[in-house]
Length: 393
Image (cartoon, rainbow, N blue to C red; front, side):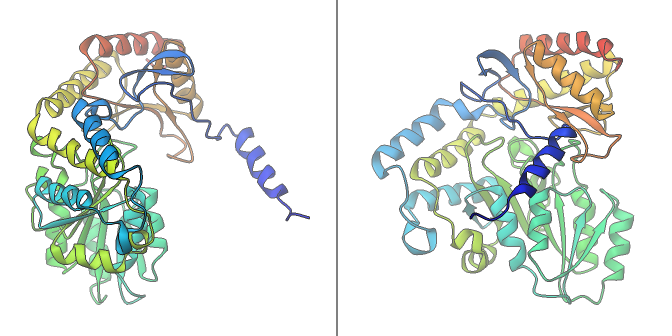
């Protein structure tokens, strides 16, 4: 007889009773600003496709050409027989884009954090110091280490310094922070983080998944945004957001690349990117570097949409990026707002406890360079209709 799995049913029922089940909608078209979800025309405000590059002709063509030439898959892990010239070309382009010596591409942003963080510390004599709102992939990576752990209040530099002082005797000190925080849309004060790191001889690790293509000159990311090239030890990120493709990014020195290539299990033991994906990665960065209009349009849309929401009386929290939450307080209110928007043809998901604190539920909207002014005005009209119905404005 198979093992008892009634516990699975119990957990399922508990999630269902508390309205916490993930029930992802089904896309029936490209993930672009106007898409089809389960048969209905929908304006998409819940994607990470900030620059609308998922359907850019140059990115698609690069994928097609590489697939025709190299095949559908790589046939191996990178460490053995799966490294193609396409992978190396994409990594050189990432390094150029980020303004660093070298880069290494992983299967996903998640696998960078869970595979690379454990290689940077050895045991309890080392310490990892993490922002309390860091992404779950960072938390998972930290859990895989044997290092001591400390957490500082979100973006609280006084508390970070106090933690550094308390761990001055540690062998290795590693500060980890998100660049852009995905729930609130605010950014880390990376200039202050690096200053403290230099003072207390600590390494700095920033996850820039939501910063690539968004922050910095032309979208080079948070390190560029603060002009900190050479002062951040490890910069990680993702191709699956603003860059519109798939895969994880590690950027830094040549020594960092060599270290990760030889010690990071999630890189060593994962099949390499399909040739089409590698070609599309390079093409997406080339588009971003040569067509600044996408980055400019993203910020035009962001500033306009946030300003108009606030003028209606909605609370957009502490956001300063294209992640614009509409703060609702109670989870039930956030769900009502999301459902009302969906009835009007707008996809904007409710973010509720336990993903955020009980009184910090919100509907999270994310801007895209592909949204037209008419699209934004239509969405704003939907918010204006929905807000009074649920007593939010």
